[in-house]
Length: 241
Image (cartoon, rainbow, N blue to C red; front, side, top):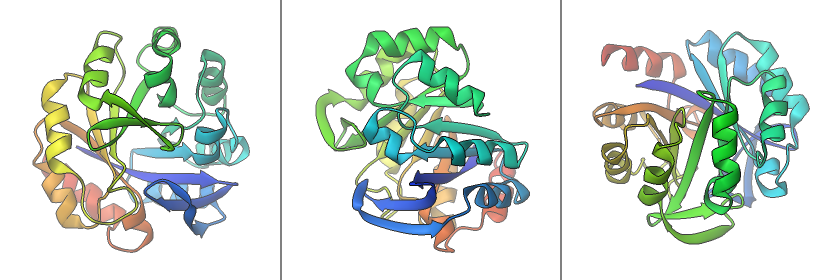
């Protein structure tokens, strides 16, 4: 399992939201590229970047910050938020990202999502954000009736590079990841699954390391709050390989 530090962007700043609520935002830095470089220096091999403004607007909104992050270090960057078309994905790759993550379009426009996956084989992940097992879209502002596991199964045939599974109820809350739901999803699909949401301590990372088939874990607020040290988390993940 790899450790993937997260950088959430809002108006060019590094922030974290509570349960995806923009009215509950904490600003951690005005230097996204500096944060990214510190993660790379600590041994992270991939960084997870989310354009929060783009996820709501439906188009890229933090391009300057994203380009600066990708230029700051020689580490893979995966980016989600606001990618609705193949042109959106292409522009993101031009900024320097190695992977894009499709979110809302996966649930609301499967035809377009499938076309993007086909256009960029091996470079497109899908993000499944869920609350109570149901898929949420539009920057978590809209809850659908679709089950997360059914959505994951549907996209298996289209070859996503990975699936980022986020439990909204845990995100930014430092209450621990939803181990059971994450393990259940990983058991249902062959696509690599990345856990996201709720990691609060090194003990949580140790618990995730025990989940069979889990490819990676995204860690955000716990890093910024000093509860997880990136270098130590990366070292620990190596011992389980």
